[in-house]
Image (cartoon, helix red, strand yellow):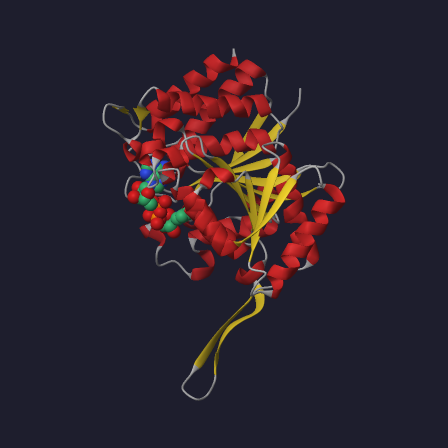
Length: 370
Ligand code: NAD
């Protein structure tokens, strides 16, 4: 039987509550499908700081590096607002992204038909929306050097950030986008600002060359990132896969996210390069939301973003495509039945807590898996 190693990092606040619902799905898959998941669990964020004085311990970092995939809940909260900067809860997530070299951030924006009226756009613009934003995560202006504030000596200061991309960084993120597109509608839209940025000119060239060399079966379009932002709110369903840099991706993925309703619905994946020997990618899956300290411990958090992150894990780390499809369908079916946590509650629907939502999704998943 295949062994699939999962390292769970539930984190703080609602992280452990949401992760609990994923654990039930893992247990079911092991029992009924012989899925072979072997799970281990560690601490990250504030809980790791309390136990080890670090945002993640070295032992847990080693486990994350050795695992086939990491499932991450959420970190942070007011308890740790005044801990030293280097060990603040978010440092745990940043360390994981850096050491696992997770350069590709995948953020799907899916609008479940049952939630179309919760979007800030007209329902007909978002109903059935299914786009995937791929953001370069380890390069660009957030990391480029020089990065400093210098004193100009005349009462003025200068803040400097450097937008920098090398060919290989653009090639590998473009490769991920084209490969993902092949599993979807086979269309990629690359966004940059080649009209005003040299890094945008290079981005455009390298994406075009990568496409020509290896992925000419995929339909490629280029769009200026500002125009892309407009199109995302004007006619979002025109897109399939969008690939863009770290800065534009940060903003465009948040815009796309809000087309779909609530933070409690949004999954994400961060992938590294395939291992030369095994072909496996390092990967971390996490909901987009934070630790929601305002509702933590009340068992009212929406676990859908965490469960949908696990569905991405099934798809991208283990190639369990049918199972991933069924889990996503189970979420859609539960929403169709009018079952809602508080954050997505609507008139005429049944309000449930975290556990009931998890149980309802598991029951649908079981029914679809038979
Ligand atoms: P948040 O995402 O935690 O919460 C924003 C709002 O959305 C809150 O009202 C919260 O109750 C609600 N919400 C979020 N997820 C929900 C869910 N699953 N179900 C129902 N409601 C949900 O963002 P915030 O309040 O800005 O930050 C809280 C803490 O989380 C901070 O310490 C922040 O640094 C941290 N944070 C962590 C991550 C991460 O771990 N990746 C991401 C963002 C924020």
